[in-house]
Length: 426
Image (tube, rainbow, N blue to C red; front, side, top):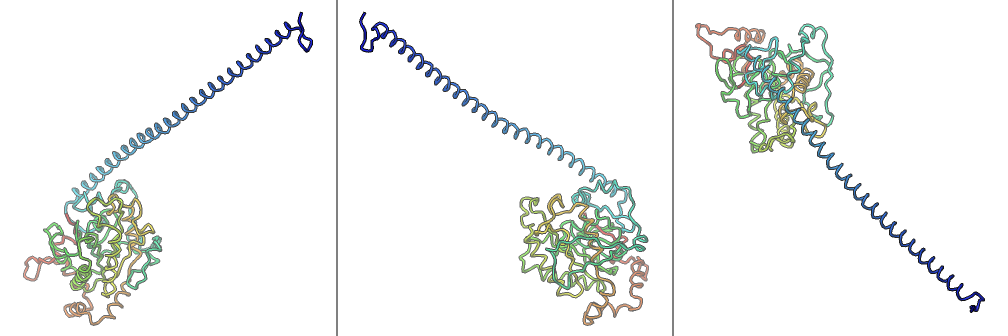
């Protein structure tokens, strides 16, 4: 037997080498299998990750679709409910109008007006108010316990002018408005319908603008009259004027101030003993303004309100009611969700307006002192020459109560055309 140099027989050495080679081949094979398994496992993990990512995307996408679908269904339900509420509102307003078709004064309850569509727009949530069974406080109880002002104003809307009507600590009751006339557009009509006011005469017309004062568009039980005709008979203590919303965008701005001042002067000529309260144009919700009416924007509102205030500062008998103190959101816009169409207000905010008028006024003594400071006023001189100053008010009331003249004929003055004083427009 041959031996290797190490002394190991050749046959044994060959067997040992073969065993090592087989062992190396086995190890290499195991290494390759482990590598393949790791690659396979990595592939499976990658596939699992991809599947997980796909599932996540599907969940998010499907969830969004489901959310939109649910939101759409809820929104549709809300729209249906709102439509039902509006239909019920119009029904209530129409029934109320049908039960009292004649135009009348607001001695016991506010008139629903002759235009239920506009009333519904201005008083969208009127159903809630109609279902409230609690009676309104009487004038007597209000007089015995005067309310304390709780009107919240927006400091950013404060105006530094002596002609801005001040806030009073004590609120008046509605008897304060008994010998007042309210003139205005559909916003004023909505105020009459849904604010809860119980006194006053209304000369209102949908679409009424500053240059419409001499047009016969105010509907009464005895036919159409103009605003000027409505002011030509009974003498009032106060005139509340809400105009300008229908003049946004229609005027070359330089034409508006003289036109508006001429209207105020004519009012004073017809009603020399009345203080004129000029209501500011209330802000709009620009997000709800219909296409084609983009001129109904708050920049124009601020411009026209500047002209209204300027007119009040020029004419001693006119004062400015800054309604945007309570209707501004603090950024020169209408309070969010205060209006269904961006212009007309819901009843809650019309009630706020009534509270504002009850707490913003001049006393009779203050206005009398202001009138005495202007003896040169030709309208006052003319009025004094026609009447006995000691009993002028009694004479005026007696005249308004007498429908016939001395000859027994019918007096065609506005006090006869306006049946009992309250007027609304179709």
